Image (cartoon, rainbow, N blue to C red; front, side, top):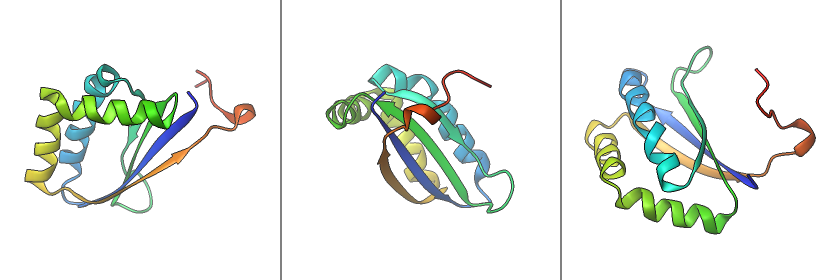
Amino acid sequence: MAIVCCIDYRLDPFRLADFERYAEQWAEAIPGAGGDLIGYFMPHEGANYVGMALIGFDSLAAYEVYRTRLKATAAGKANFDFARDNHFILKERRTFLRPVPSTYLTGKA
């Protein structure tokens, strides 16, 4: 994995169960479209409106192919519609990062 797409979500704190459902729905769709799903993360302590997702890719070109595939799948369309119709995501921002190899967690818990 050469890059990680970090999606920073601002959520409606009264609709966190909807965000959790949304995140769970991506568990199969993202890998099926070519992304390496590292995980979705919910608020726990501190701010009650921040969520994150981390998805790995070999390159920005691979990310672009993934986005096209994801939007074309039935599961992808349904989940995007679910988010649009339920308004639990107030804002989202994507940042592309690269891991620092000596610090990257590789299967250690």
